[in-house]
Length: 315
Image 1: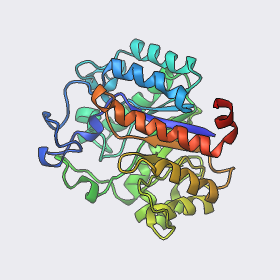
Image 2 (image 1 turned 90 degrees about the vertical axis):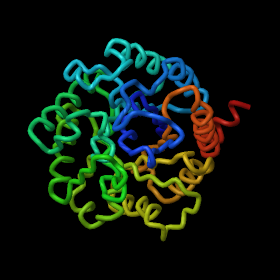
Image 3 (image 1 turned 120 degrees about the vertical axis):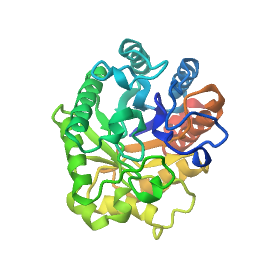
Image 4 (image 1 turned 30 degrees about the horizontal axis):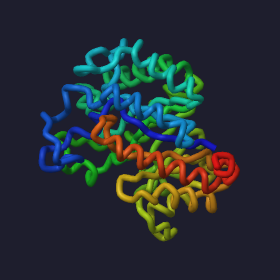
């Protein structure tokens, strides 16, 4: 069973909001995106050291603008890590027995990290950049087990407060998803996406989404009534035979992770339930470490509840 945690190296995927609609409105930044990396190395090191003691065995790293890619150095911002530095950090994760996997979010709602290319979506230039980055990242991670492609929230509702909104509809969305999936699969890595496209396009999703793509539906509430569309999505994915890594968060409720584990272990077959992913949706900086630690605490409690032998061994 995978017990995953999502951490951000790059954080510009959130930074295209105007000042009155920022994710963290108390923060003052120059928009459309930060020009200095929103990740503190000291906070990163502290957080990584904390993972093992909380039962995490999978680390999803949202890279964004956090690396000085050799294929596209123009995407780097001030303090972006060199490839060599990042590889050294990956080695630390691996020595802890934790499997690191990459995430690059190619949703147009979260692609400001792509710089000027975020305004060239679905062009030949865009496809070449995406291909280059996926290839390089897979090489950096030395053939990771999964590659998370994001692809969430590409709707007007999620982009109405962005400074630059782009929404791919119907066949174009699928064309670009298939292109990204192909880049991952041809290098023998398993693609992984957020599943919220299912919420508003169920028939289309079930007809066109490849079973080879790992699904992460996400729901951050506390009421797991199956009539709630976001909760029902877990059941729909299970009925249709998709492999799942359900995603929880302490963004709104601490108990969400444990409730997600409870519901999904009861309603998703062991064959299709690969594990769980915990998210905090905060940058990797010292001022937000308490939120990270609370999220990790929830993982530990959820894992211990469903693995009593681990709890007994610790006692």
